[in-house]
Structure formats: structure tokens, C-alpha cells
Image 1 (spheres, rainbow, N blue to C red):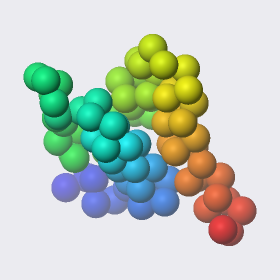
Image 2: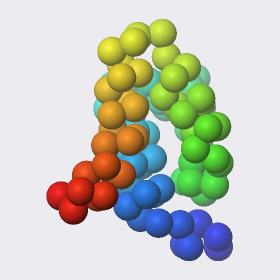
Image 3: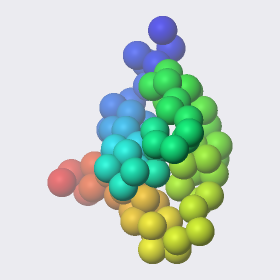
Image 4: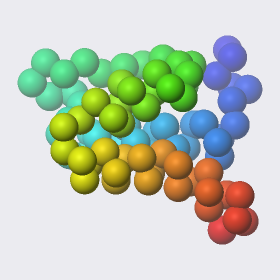
Length: 81
């Protein structure tokens, strides 16, 4: 599958950590909220991912936290941390 060719550091880990944060806050998977397949989460573009899982929330602090999770891993990796 194509998802095996995606970068762990740049794509897989940041996206999975955003999903993990949403699940831990009860914002995915409860009260009829749809769970998405890992393949879908990894295949969509960054723009679609951010729109669907990050910026759609009304809570600005939550959006900032999720964006930090999504972009922070790439920045830490770039710095070698």
C-alpha cells in the first residue's frame, strides 16, 4: 500500500498524534462521531487533514494545541531533537 511509503516523521507520527489527542479529549469516536481509517488519515493532503481534524473546532486554544502537535514534530525533527 502507498501509505507504507509515507515519512514517519513528517506525515505519520504528527497525524497519529493529532488523532490520539482528539480521541483522548473525546472529540472522535463518541456520540456518533465518525472514526476514520488509518489509510484515510494518512492519504489525504495536509490541507484536507488540517481542515477536517484541526481547524474545524470552535475552541481556539484547542486549534492552537492541535496545530502545535501537527507542526511541532516536523520542527523538532528539523532541529534534530
